[in-house]
Image (cartoon, rainbow, N blue to C red):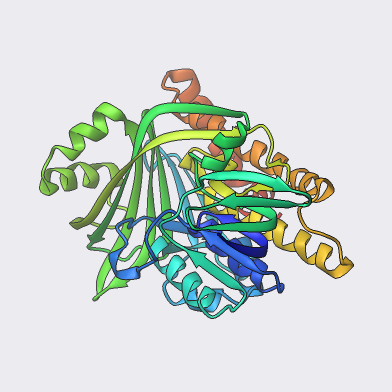
Length: 393
């Protein structure tokens, strides 16, 4: 049986896995990707979700020379409006003081397309599709994954195989998880007014509704809605025809982007969050959704995954420069130290903000109104919040 030697073996070739593979290959490492799905094909991708890319993530993508392949598909976010129930109680954020954008909205398919175009050019990257992990074992200072017709032997295994990580299940890494017993519906749509590069987030009793600005399509103004609500409500919404759904959305979006003209795509996803008890095992690092997932209220899940990638990239660069072996216990614990608290903090923030905005009584409504007004009047607090969202603090 053939044995393939690599420095780094990555299980999962999605957004985070592909980004990790490309960045680490740029450092001269031999990288193998094991992906369960078919070979990536931009034209056949079914997932039409978008990703909010923070300014901090954009800077890292620039550093590894991948932003150029993505940027022409990216719509800048120049303003953010946070609205509690209605327009009378809202916060406005911009980033004029830094002369940069608050973020960028890009379809996932275009991010993957840019990454895979570059990965194909990397001679030190091998990609295997339609494979799943059969067995994992150790040989001295190597971790080995057994496939049907070959072995992959590496110094370190990167688990980037999603919320239901097979690697995590094999090693029984404990997690804390929360099922919000809700769904998120993602709707891409055309509308009558320009969005002016503004993202909106409405907070309602049963969950937030975000409107994310997308690039024009054939002169049609385009945006994406991410709306979390009860399973019952989302299921009943999906049972309606598009005209009835549009009528409901027009009421909820309060004219922010004019009239909704046409629904392009609809997708739903269960709303769950989790946090691994630790982000490593022996010669294993968990990245992105295999390590953590969050309530989408802040739209920062992918960006935190990219912070994991950047941290791994910098740690690997340091070890390579010192001639040290990747993947030993010190390496893994250093990754844990750099990343666990950031994930724990975001987990707590998103969970608690969701809880506060769902409360519906006179006292809490008044308290939210007072806090929002206080923040709106304080440049210092608003700057701290925008810096956090941008991933630059």
